[in-house]
Image: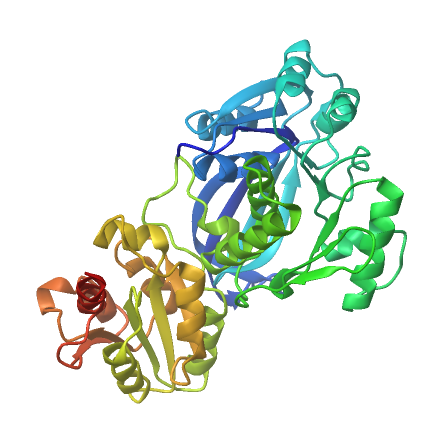
Length: 453
């Protein structure tokens, strides 16, 4: 995308895997769940995920990281090479791998292997770093940032995303973005520190201790608290999502660094980063990141919608789901959703992601971004949960939710509902409900354009 500044990311790459299945029983030899029918998804992790997300934003990205000759390093090269430029530093040992096992979208266990570390930087890495106009550090404590610390100190980075095993940012860094628990640890405090007052104190202490311009403590669904040393600014999230938060910090850091590189003020960058991280979680978190080898119809995590459907089914209730873009919410949508809710005991709305809407309706759509559409839908009394899917049609999401009734507006015909056959697999039923005549997002946009003439 023209006009976006290039970005150099420095940090420790990981290879992440998700094994996602269902758990309906315990193993006979131990009280542990049996996760069956696992599908595997591989993606970049650590600094590689941060760089990957920045590149997917349409930015020229170079990643300085440690890679070796092991299979995990080769796999990560394959995932990253089409998206960005790799500047490799020799890795001693195998690339760290992180494997999550999930049942019904919730993590059951995480398996870590690979102890590779960077011992010494290369002249090429130093030269790239010294000539970079914008730098983001993602330090997972595997030696990449430490090996380049002298070069980083010469020209402090725009953003430093710290992690507990990594070292402190170099003085002069413009923005440091620890999570709440990380800020607590770095500030030398004990306890959970869940209050805003604790976060403000920790952030102010870190500004002084690290001698950096600003610290943004990320607060999950509460947004982020930005401190320059006193009088912090709270940047709230536009919506609360209870899905997979894995990778949200990487999304925050990548967005903040990109906006700062483009000339935004720190406060503007943090606001943009909170919005991006919120949308990222709503769209499934790291589990929704599509790698080069991923199934293009892979499921985007449904988060709390999945839990709601399971609870209702467990009590013998009827789960209803409805789907669509819901770009410009109008009376026809509301009538449809109210009628759908009356058909059962809960209503889950399956909404197209922004990319999915663009593929279906063109580059001018959606008018309202995903975070806004989710927020408006969630505010309706008839809607119990919202889930997001990135494909053109929601079959994968429906296979996970397994609703008893699937509802679409009456402007569809049976031939337009590929979901109908899928519902039959578990005894569900697809139904059409009538829209109000003359109400549609396309008609609304046409009237707006006519009125503007």
